[in-house]
Amino acid sequence: MAVAKKKETQETLPNMPTPDEVGKAAQKYIDAKNAVVEAKDEEDKAAANLVTIMRKKKRQSIRVEGVMVMLRHRDAQDIIRVKKADK
Image (cartoon, rainbow, N blue to C red; front, top):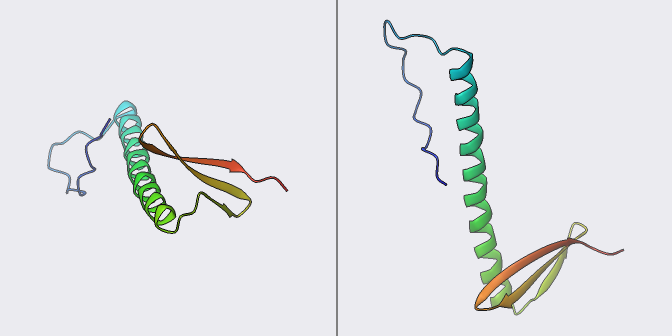
């Protein structure tokens, strides 16, 4: 679900009502939703890049900062699995 990108701040027009409590809460929700969408897009790009590099280097797993990142190919789809690494 894509939420409309936040428009650049515009000057307040004369005779425009100020947002009430509901309007402010709705704007806060929209801002949070946009941040989630942007984070998901960034995650998708990072995952695609990770898959590309791991396949190129013929790696199936890597340990990073106490986390095991594993690449599996299942049903014509690459799956990245992340789990806490065993000590």
